[in-house]
Structure formats: C-alpha cells, structure tokens
Image 1 (cartoon, helix red, strand yellow):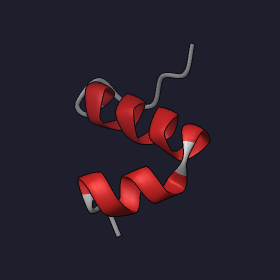
Image 2 (cartoon, rainbow, N blue to C red; image 1 turned 120 degrees about the horizontal axis):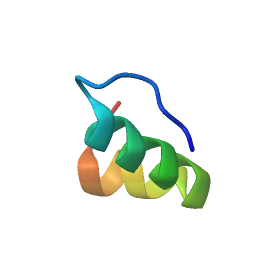
Image 3 (cartoon, rainbow, N blue to C red; image 1 turned 120 degrees about the vertical axis):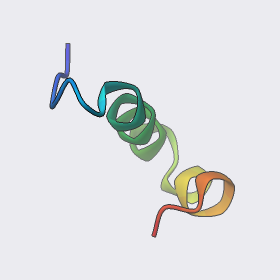
Length: 33
C-alpha cells in the first residue's frame, strides 16, 4: 500500500488516487492547486 504519513493519510490517499484516476477531478472538485 502507499503510506506517506500518519498525520495526513486519508487526504494523501484521496489525493493520490484522484491524481491517478483523473487530475482534472482534483483541480475541479477538491480545488487543490
């Protein structure tokens, strides 16, 4: 599994998965820029 940090596991996981699935989703839905 992909583990970066215990502090931000869910955020990192969602960001990582979203980036792989579609970077547009992260920039549009979440708004991480």
